[in-house]
Image (cartoon, rainbow, N blue to C red):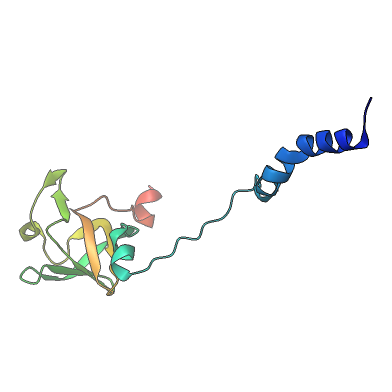
Length: 134
């Protein structure tokens, strides 16, 4: 003997979990949300390592007191963190001279300075066009 009220009570009991948790289930999606990373301060942005930029060429000017060297139109600052080498051995800036061929990498700071990461004195030079035809 099934009464309409019993049917109603059973239906309500069966749908109670859907009514209670339904909005939360429907609100969840399987799509990942794209989170935007924003920097809130300049110090946070400078904490990330800057991208290294390669360089090569002959030293045009060299200031050992100021610890700078110029290659083409760039003036690179040599810091305590700069790794300087010649013939696969670590050396100091004192070994460099104007006219030496150098290769290496640097990165730009927020204030526009170019800090040398590595400097290879007498680095591997690119062969000239006349040398490749031989």
